[in-house]
Amino acid sequence: MWDFIMNHYYEIAAVILFGIGFMNLLVQRNLIKKLIGLNIMDTAIYLFLAARGFVFGRIAPVPQDLTNLSAETFINPIPSGLVLTGIVVSVSTTAFGLALALKLYRRYRTLNLDEILVLSKKEREDKKQ
View 1: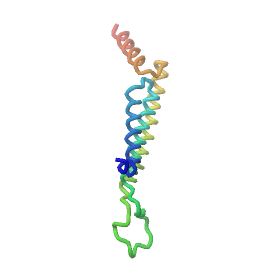
View 2: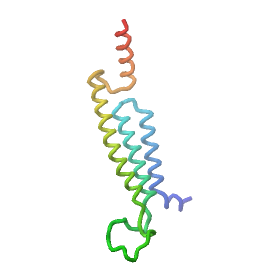
View 3: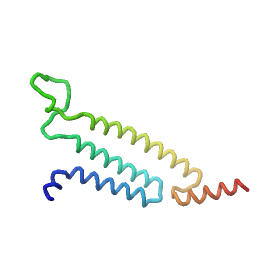
View 4: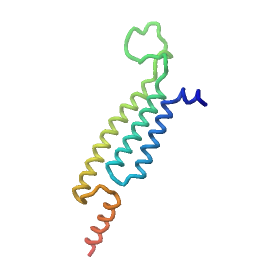
């Protein structure tokens, strides 16, 4: 058991981080705190992909003198590409979420999700009358 933990501590840390972010997403009522939880989950996924994609003893597939090297000496660049793509998507999603939170705050003067739902329901009832 101890050997497994020592050989896979990056993956274990990623799972723990994902759990922290997921619980934060479920428990918090503040929209900014929910976005922070979502970012923690994103970071956990990137850590997991980077940990699974790295192989000790291999080198990056960068153009160099390739005369005596085989395909087994290089790491797979796909996980790194997925992580970079995910980071770009995560930044844009966070920016969009923050913009929506700002709009909600300007309209309802709160970031508490329960209060926003009550106020929006009250608004809809007032419009019907």
